Image (tube, rainbow over all chains, first blue to last red; front, side):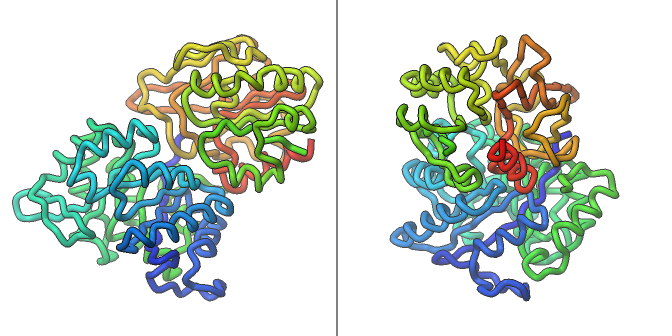
Length: 251
Length: 195
């Protein structure tokens, strides 16, 4: 049976992990490879690298990192953050990433989604959507959550599916950072609106939160701090999910 | 030496590392190799075109009894033809390659492989172990005795049980990506390396 996926997210700046990491066994706490390896050992299904390095000149550093990850990590990984062109997407895939994700550039230029899906294949193209409830609808935000776009996230999800996205990485800005659970109403609405897999993101604080997201149809769920701070290991989380009858990969 | 045939698509760094092989598209090097791995991502026809100059040397190696492992599209290329596009496969096995119907396609993610017979690739790997898949097509062998593993994909109220591994004498093929399948995948690659 196809397993639900547990995904770890790493924020990268100039080739280093930027969120505080408190693992004791990792000598170089800021090294993405060491952290990714640890997650892999614990049974993570996929890793997402979000590059928050703003400038284009630093792109070379990201590509070097992608190459290193591709050589040393034996689970699929996705790379995104500030990607604006098909050329960049091609370069990242060629360096060894399994998938790329687009966010701001997709909203600014929906044609890019279509072109990108043709170049790298829908299966390798993820569209990240950051959404926030504005009292009437879930509104799409871009530029790392700084810019409201006046677009309904549900409609946008349908649109990117039509344009060729293979997957949606859905982050709720209302729940992100709260550790009080994923945004279930938002996630459910998007899952029901599209046929492609939806990755729930934002707000994971306990194993129960993952269970809630999978129960309403999320194909995968993503978290950062719950793993970073060693609050729960991936293995503990998966043991819990197995007990609750959610199909997950156990080794 | 293990030759990992480079068809110029995708990055083979971790396949090379896991197998301690050499990435090459040089027919002479492939001929010299003790084992051959044919990874593959992309379109059946386009990849077959790239493979055409190497068809003879690969078939010779297989007929000489050298261990051969096809991964993903590399498994599909062992068969006669594919619904995906025109072009003849290597035709080592009778049968074709068909597209998923009635289920969400592509089939992406971790799914279980149920072992159908003894195959040295699966030594030390438990029945029903999870491997990572990304594909829209699967092989349909005419000779069922070559099927080493099957996978069950349920989606949208439908179910497809497809061949996810084949095994016959020195010829092996897997639909999943062992190089992306963590411990189970590394074990499978190590098993191939030890043959």
